Length: 169
Ligand code: OFO
Image (tube, rainbow, N blue to C red; front, side, top):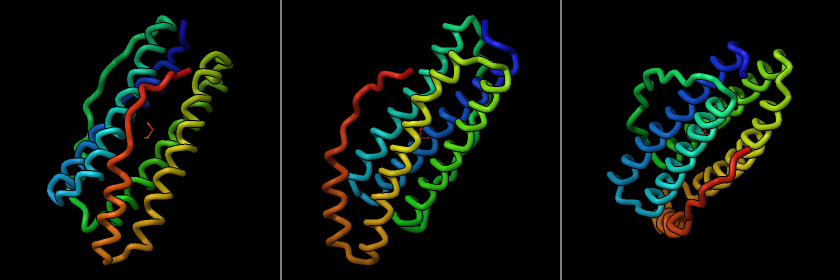
């Protein structure tokens, strides 16, 4: 049976993962408005990944005999001044999520729940990967500046991203 304090921390993180899904859906809509279909594809995959992250925790809380309490999802920002600005915000958001996963692990540590710590290791590794992937796109966007041809080339690259359902835990 999961400790009550840890159950609450998991529920908070489920909300953050669902917010991530919602934020990236808003970004997907932004790139639809710019007609950059490769970016749209990149965010479509990102949205699916965030949903999988939320559901991984949703299933885990149940598996541990806990109760999932869904809270309201915050309204995301819906506009950005440029693709570069948007990706700066993606990186900031992923860094925030990393800090939340760390905080969740601190609670698991505090209540000495080693099984939860081992489960959350996957999320920690995923955050390292996500920050690195987003950092790469951001670095390219910084090089591109106002070169629309280069932006279209990046758009083409991002069109290749595909979703593979993660095996969590
Ligand atoms: Fe859920 O990993 Fe990004 O936010």
